[in-house]
Image (tube, rainbow, N blue to C red):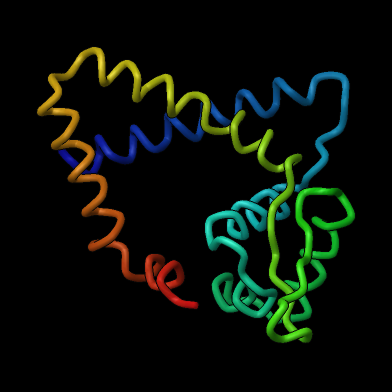
Length: 150
């Protein structure tokens, strides 16, 4: 069944990521809490949101979002950049430290995609790409709407 296959695929990506993250903690403490990890990933996905936009997306209060952002700034995963047009507005951006984490996080995705490119025909890969694109852009309005707003 399609639903079960998709859930299983998603779970395997998550499990591989969790295993790699915990293996990376050997001999040192985790530098981000789970909540901070989710928060910085949302900041990255929203591409330079303001604290207000982050709070709106996460459906949390602005002070709560500001507290989480302050912690991420202190740990070096996020920077606040002042708008040139409106000095009252600050955009949140990720740092090189986050980029390293993000690359590590997505390694297995690239491994599986490369295997798919070797196993499937060019037409099958193209069909898969088109289906994933349509799912992302047309079938997820609850999330996609935040990517299209300014």
